[in-house]
Image (cartoon, rainbow, N blue to C red; front, side, top):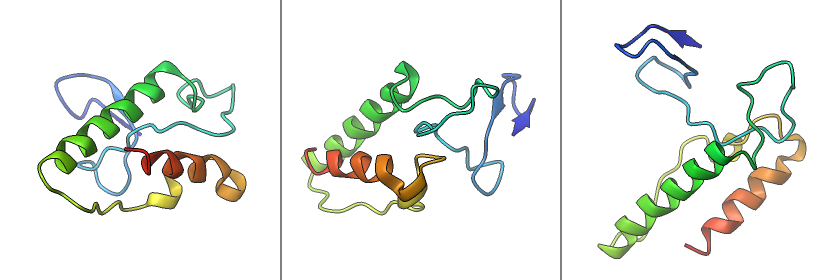
Length: 95
């Protein structure tokens, strides 16, 4: 977690470097003692999913035929067997 890195004094998680914030695609099994671990059906998590679909749809509409997604199998955290992660990517076929 990084705190106070920018003008907005908020916290954010990183993937590798401070310039690579991790979008919160949710936790399949969130820990109630950690309120920042949002469940996959939380409104904020669902909003990120809608934005991702809108961005991908924009690029498809102008001719993009493929996307590179780093860390694709691990976007949803605490997901034993990657059950929710698989559902997440299956819905992308509908975009």
